[in-house]
Image 1 (cartoon, one colour):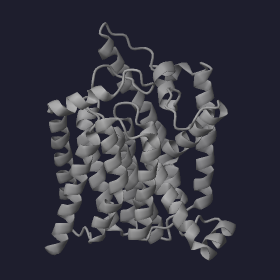
Image 2: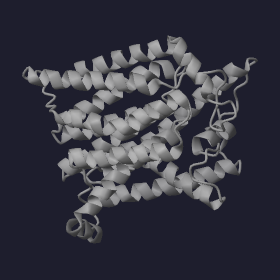
Image 3: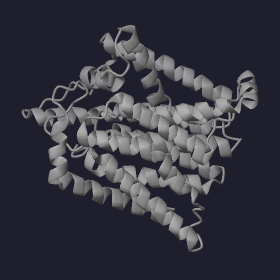
Length: 368
């Protein structure tokens, strides 16, 4: 498993480095308009980090599959089903990379492609949400299993967009993906599911290879392709972990992912309340408010350098925010009531923190 992770890291880092140095990649980045509200950098930065991530992940997964054919010396226990994972991920990830290259694939078409990924995952991998550990709901799922399939499709289709929503600053989505992947891998190993842990560790390693170029220098962005790849892999792994291991509460991955999930839900509510379309981009997400209202104590004569320094100081706030949910999720992975309680606590804390930042009522110790 460790050697496969090393391969994922090296391949992703090398491919991302080639993208950074590619004149073609530099040219395509000019398509990303200066007027976009979610833009918090100067200059033209390639948005093809997802392609580097994809190559690193595919190389390590296929190498692991090849080693199994030679006797599985690393006990990774991968099987031909890995190819089905890659096939299922294809529509969303390739659609995201196409958007990064052309800037012409609108949100509706990308949503349809992510739904296609969810449908393929349910069909090819037999993915389903078998239970929610809620008595009445579980009874309904038992008598109407198609609802479990629908929930799985919804999760696989939605999580890539949730990761895309939080992918706003250097190192933010990438580090969140690494933290979540390693937490899922840890629990998978505790359950004896080495195959699933292998895929997750390789994904985390490839993400670390990408971060060499993304944080703190901001030379490469993950783009839609990277966000959809992170969300797709983590969604497939989360559902598979719960489906294969009845001892793991279905609320364990929910608490792990409550930050991107609740950010998405709250953003939809916020835009609808203003009468705006949920698909319309704006600059009022939680991480953007932290950038504008909390990370203010950075001044540099060079505007680009000043923006980069503020950008880099924003992400650690959200890394710590993520760890606040990961720790209890791992500790109480078998205890549904406690996990649900922490989910509710996070949502309340998020809304309170959001309102405090909007109203400029932020404690001084939070400001650098």
